[in-house]
Length: 330
Image (tube, rainbow, N blue to C red; front, side, top):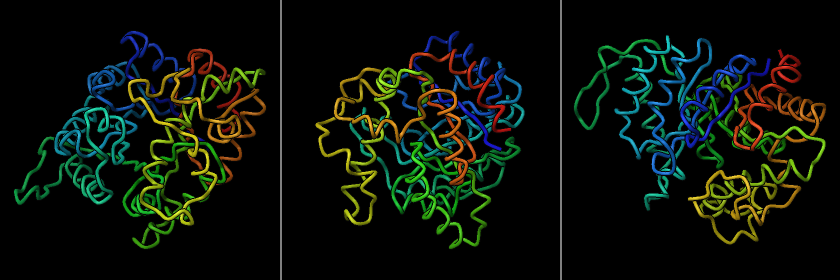
């Protein structure tokens, strides 16, 4: 079975965000996520509260937060509180930080800091006592558990996801690149004595259903540009032979990136992205083509397809997926 999720950019009007979340649940989506970039867009925790109060089954959370914009104890407390409100439906995606950090003049944190935060947040959100800077602390009122998904692109972060994560977040829908990433995830899992098959795998990417491929590509071209920020960071830290050319090659003509147009349809940020890259990174085309691409993702181990729902046809996308695509993967 393939689970389906949506990620919303928190720049929607509140009533529209609630309406899309309800519509997604009605159409069979089981996960609802929000980008966490508090300066660019609205603060996510009040929005997650509204999403929890307007759904009954969807699992909800940030996709993704980071361990330095907010103190991990604050994140743990917020999500543990939401676990009570939602009846145990909260999950967390976490990474090193991108737009939330860069827009305030900071850089992403280290993989080690992220790994420390994962273990701290997981323990606190389940009511366990932890040592925090030499002081024992506990959320005595917290209960339940908090599944944690770790986002990464490079071998080090991916091994960490395999070692510590309940799931891994891979921000593209390229089966070849996902297979490459999962090699490191599984390596990390085995090193930690874990069963690699126990780790959930999310492919997160936009989709556009249309017979007009030129239009479809233009609606999602912003996405490979978004991914390029992470690729630039990878290229600065790894030798060329350590990374697949299918991931790194397309950034050669990239001239820069304006975070104030982050995840924006039609943004100049995406001018350098070729059609071939759009086709690999996204899920586009007719219903039949979309089903075929999703089956390729299932075949390489993907367990959740998370639609970055910001391509201009949001209600229609939810309806078509609910009627013609999700049932095919149940």
